[in-house]
Amino acid sequence: MNKLKIAAMGVEHRHIFGQLKGMLDVGCEFVGWWTENDNRIAKDLEKKFPDIKREKDKNTLLNNNEIDLILIADIPAKRAGLAIECMNAGKDVMLDKPGCTSLEQLAKIKNTINKTKQIYSIDFSERFEVPSVAMAAKLIKQGEIGKVVQTIGIGPHRLNIDTRPEWFFDDELNGGILCDIASHQIDQFLFFTESKSAQIISSSIGNFSNPNKTKLQDFGEILIHGDHGQGYIRVDWYTPDALPNWGDGRLTILGTEGYIELRKYVDVAGRKGTDHLFLVNKTRYEYIDASNQPLTYFKNLMNDVLNRTETAMKQDHCLEVMRLAIVAQNSAKRLGNLNR
Image (cartoon, rainbow, N blue to C red; front, side, top):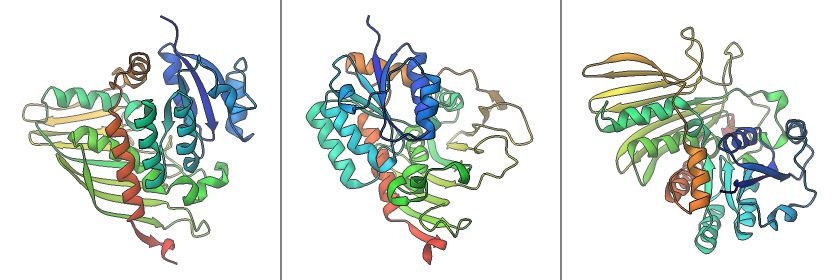
């Protein structure tokens, strides 16, 4: 079997490196890339892949019939348009989150999917690149906590204000904190509750720590109810300097017969490493090191591209995540400095 050939387009966020690593690790071939701007990320990509040609014209990649899948990590507001171009050129796409920033963009994406039959996938890295989430899914499938009733997703991030590009501080370009970061937690909520659809009961966004950045939202929260469960989400840009990584991301999954807590990236003042899982049910209360649990998204996506299947993520799920994230963003109450 020939290797799946991939390209990268719109290199504006460092998540492109995780997207590329995931596909290269399962045996894909990286054949070219294009981006509009000469930013720090583009320079780092050139250093990491000196033998891969950077094209001056994106149409060179779009017109290359050997390329099967294009990875996109553009400025969030531009991702939808670029993905639509790629799909119209006969390419499947895998985007960094958020996959789009408005309901109008989402409608155009849906129309393009229906017309072209191409795959539109978003790499929700806080699920697809985290072994402890895969372990939690395995335990729940085995019936360890009964029926899932609620998820509580916490997504704190480090601001790194001096290294961020200008678009990061403009909610019209980044989509806002709920559309951007909280799409991760919405994805996990739908996945673990097995909800096909949901309603945003309430949402809020705020700026409490960056009064000079008037279009930056540094806090957000969502109360969400699905057809098979409930959820609460809190995201922020407040990771303290002393923490050794970018954020203490956590997920608690409540079931009718127990619960699971994931400390995905760090166990504060506790065990070293990542992917800490705590299981409590009728017969067990224990810690599980989930760091070696296999990940499946990238291999499944590769097979989906080759076989025209839908095993990495259901297309309807992907689109529903973004619909809910955008609705939560658009309807959010504005708090703190955003009220000025």
